[in-house]
Length: 325
Image (cartoon, rainbow, N blue to C red; front, side, top):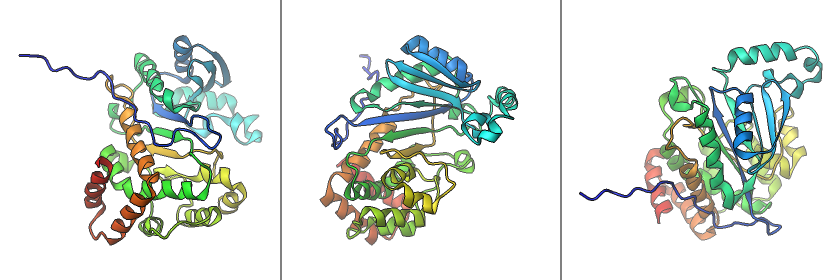
C-alpha cells in the first residue's frame, strides 16, 4: 500500500491588505503563556537559538534585544511580582519578597512571552519560538486540568481611520460565533475566565449595514458597551492610541498601553504539543480581515445577521459558508 504523504507544516495565510498607511509591510506580534521553565531559563534558551543581548528588569522579567526575530520579553504574568513596574513607593519595599514569591509560585503563575512586532511575511518564523519552549519542557493548556494559558495576536491596523476600525469590528462580531466554535474552549477554560463575547445588543448595533460612525462615536459606543479588557478582541489599546483622552475619561485606572494594533485573545496555547503551530489560529484571523476588506459582502452578512432568528451556534454554521466561499 502506498504511504500517504502528509504536509510537514501549515501554510500561513496572508491578509488582503499587506501594507499600512505609510506603505510599509504591516506587522504582527504574538504573546504566549506557559509554565515550567523560569523566565530566566527561557530567555537564555532564546538567546542561544536567536542571538541578541539580555537585559534583566527583575528576577522574573527579562528582555532579549536584537535577536534574529527582533526584541522579545519573558516574565511571570503577575503585576505583583514586578514591583518596580508599578507603584514606585512599593518598588522600594517589595522586590525581595516579590522575587521569593515568584520562585515559589512559578508552577502556578504562567510566564508570558511577548514578541516585538514582526513583518507579516515573517510571522511563520515565530513558530521557532514554540520549538524553543518545547525543548525546555514548557507546559501548555492541555497539560493540567486548571491550566488556562492563552495565545494572543497583535496585528497592526491597515489604516488608522473610522471606516477601517468599524469594518474590522463588524467582521469580527459577525464571525465570532464561528471563531469561538473553532477554538472550542472546554468547560474548564470557561470556568477559568476565557474572555467574554461582546454583548448581543452591541453586536446588533455594530452589525447594522447603516452603522458607519466617526472615530469619536465609535469609541463612545464601544466604551459604553465594553468598559473592560475582557473581550476576545480587545480594542482598548487601539482606541487609546486613537484618542487617549476619551478612553482615559471613561477608564482612568485601567491598565492600557496605546498602540495601533488589534489585540486578539485566544484561549489555547498548546506549547508542549510538537504538532502545535500558531498558523491555524492566525489563518482564522485572516478570515476576519478578508471579510472586513469586502464592504459589499460585509454589509450583506450584517443584514443577514439582523434577520437571523437562530442561536449563535446555528449562526456559526451560516458564516462558516461565508468564510469558505
